[in-house]
Amino acid sequence: MKTLKITKKDLDKDNKYIGETELSDWQNPYNGNIEIDENLGYVKFEKSIVLNGSLIAKAGSGIEAGLGIEAGSGIEAG
Image (cartoon, rainbow, N blue to C red):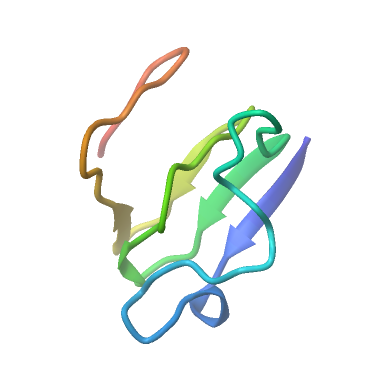
């Protein structure tokens, strides 16, 4: 399975994801894992994150949910 690595270059000045890969299409989920690089603070997404894989935020990075987080298998926090 492929892994999309989100780094500082994929974020705007407000830490919002501006990368080229579409991540919010419910009809066509991202088929892979997403890894957020370390020390980015909270990374914001305009819409949903829809994927068939894992979402991992390394130390010093994270995501924040406005309405909720759902997972098929589970959610872990360190």
